[in-house]
Image 1 (cartoon, rainbow, N blue to C red):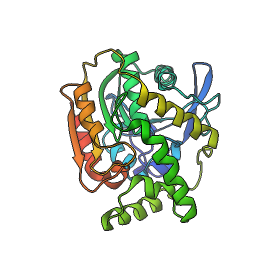
Image 2: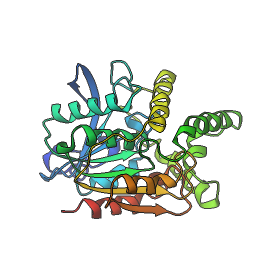
Image 3: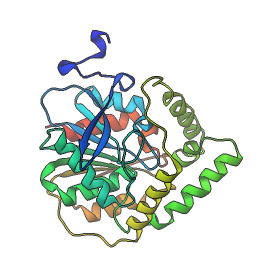
Length: 288
């Protein structure tokens, strides 16, 4: 690795160079990747979306985050190269994530929760509010959020449409069908091929089914108690089919004082379609 590909502390600055590491927590090995500017500040922990492994993060977005801070991307139990039985409840996924963060020797973190990862993040701050200082939630919703009980049906139908039309399902699920959305989808699909070596283990159908059960439970659950004293930033696409945009306002109601940014002509892949803008917004929000 060249000097320009590293920062202080020996961490790589590019997603494609980040080594897949493992740590044992809560009785199972979990994989994670770490990169960015290790300047002694609070690290940003990333929790990824439904049906995703560590390779599902957009390299352009992660690299932009890592320009200014230490970024740690966590795997879920039973997903990718993390072993154990996959979880089908966000309460259990959150407990695992808390155990991993503490096993890494961290006592204070910021969270970036993407889609399903945002649901896990909400459960983390309920279970361990002392562990988290600031939270970014992207393309996600609260318990019993608007339209979340329909998310499983939307996802499955869209995947089947992708199969019969020979279209990558993420193109249909994450992006709008406007000209700008189609261009963003093509660019995203190209970026996802950048990492060629050291890739994570593929996600199995069993993982996908378990996570869909977790989402369905979340959509039917009434909101659990517990207050979060830290700051929160909510990011959402105005044309999100999987998690309707009304969930952004529902999150503001659930967490008074949270800041909401709605991105135009953006679907569920709001982060992938607006990498630089969302990375900049994240840096501003996390700046202390």
